[in-house]
Length: 242
Image (cartoon, rainbow, N blue to C red):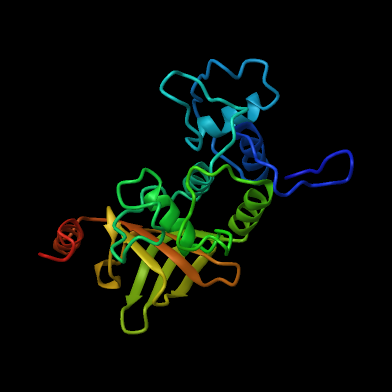
């Protein structure tokens, strides 16, 4: 997925360009083919095919002037946003337990993606308190985050049964029924917002992201909108006032 230089070095602190990161992602993950956006500054570029692959999958985006700027440094916020899109968790909203990074407050375009990446434990451990969203990502940082992402396990299916007391979800997946026992740190997201276990319903379409040991980190469910969903969303919108 990544390679070194002819002199046998990796140069871990060197900055990564947007084109280089697109190549790493295209090598690391499999993406569905789609209609790519046409960027006016990638014709003849060595990474053109990788950029178009990620563009067609909705992972990378260009700028309002129609450019991709392949040779510009990719920022930490951009790296995290692309990884979270790859995991199909870019629609996760509703974090109410404060801002984990003082320089990525609510309202920042990458806030939810950064919070999601933190909970998935794919961020370098020294990023605490401040994140540096505009700081160019290094080769070491991108390699580490891609590696941690590749270790995550994805399960798709429907909810077969729920045991709120034991915090257990039975999921009917292509390989059969699987049980997932959630922890206090597991993020549950139903329909449009982070929600409690009680909001889940049998029959929900469900998407579970587990760590390398099979422990669920994220549970994303979609189903019929309920009064509990509405109450949860209002509670988030008013920050607990209603």
